[in-house]
Image (tube, rainbow, N blue to C red):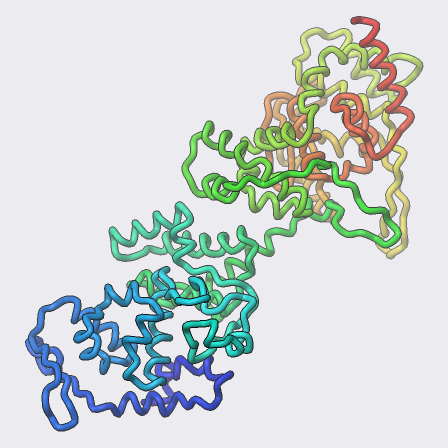
Length: 577
């Protein structure tokens, strides 16, 4: 055997670290020197196994028996074809090896040297694992889904007493990492796309690049969803299992570089978790700061079938009605994730339907489950509209001249659209809730600079008005260049606030389109609350007003102006009942 050839390296060297007394080189030399001859001179004469004196022990020349041919092929792959005669006499063929158990192995190989038993058992374990049918062990050992459980060790397996374990393991496998292994068979059997890929291969006997890409993504996403880190060794194992399960595939299809496509895909999924929105979730605690109280005060008990619902939402072709019912069926599981993850980006990656054009409906459903006053703004806005307008004209509550002109236009023009009326009044409220917060930033020289927010800052952190879509994109680019965390906000297209045409919400690179300004504001607020995001500093007073009056939530901050307006509206509503 040419040791310089990497394909002929001893595949069992990783398992000899703990049992240095076992010389596997001698074992294989002994196996190779066994008195076995194979005659394959023509198609009609297939196999002829002989004894040292030339007497034929087993002659199956010209045999058309498929089970024997399959067994011969398998044993040749394992370089243990000398076992063929014994297995045929014992009527142990490939279909039997698929279901054989450890106590059968002891009886089957009891007359062979321990080295042969070790090598055969290793080959059988690997082969069975690749088919998703792990070798079963009798006694106190349970069904194995990986060579060793993550918590087991070589020392513990050696220490087990034969009195309490009917199977004595002749060698100890090395576990390269502490993470549990997920067999390829599990991924293929437990996911819709995995079953479809298997059916595709069974029908066409090959995979195209499109199917390979789906398979690579499926494997990486399955590990991410289970919260199991993929190691480089684990990705190599999965590559080998893919080649076993899909024999026409080649390693080169999955090994574009040393790390491989599967491992790279998993790493890219992990990197995509970090987003600008995630930075605004307060998941670090200072020693001098009190513990943060999450808005989701309820405890959520995940549904037992939550994982199954998640897979259906990701991989099944569901109708809109089926999506709604499935989404509601795993609401507790999802809200538990939201409460424990602490990273909006990770949540959105896992529950990717939030990214769909109608994802805001799913946010609305989750808010309704998590909180009680889900429709406070939509139900009460119209009855409060005239009262807010009157308040802003009273006692010089609104001093900004431009905003006063907008309100005058609302009063005298009866042809304004509902969206223009709503947006204009909400826009004008920022003239009453004049920002008092300040921000400290470093200037170009590195010195701290205190910036006081303006009415315009407050308005644009809530609703940005652009004359074109390009102006909106320029605004987003400007925020990105300033390294500012881009919080959710409404943006509209129009020449001015009285003539808006298009309405959107920007949230973590997602754009939701709306036909109603009020509905957009309603969802924008719910995004802040559901994902526990901090309100923008520039418009925090405005959001506290929505929070306390319309949604009846207890605010973290108190502002006198918010209290005054709340009291005025409550008094006005009571007087008209």
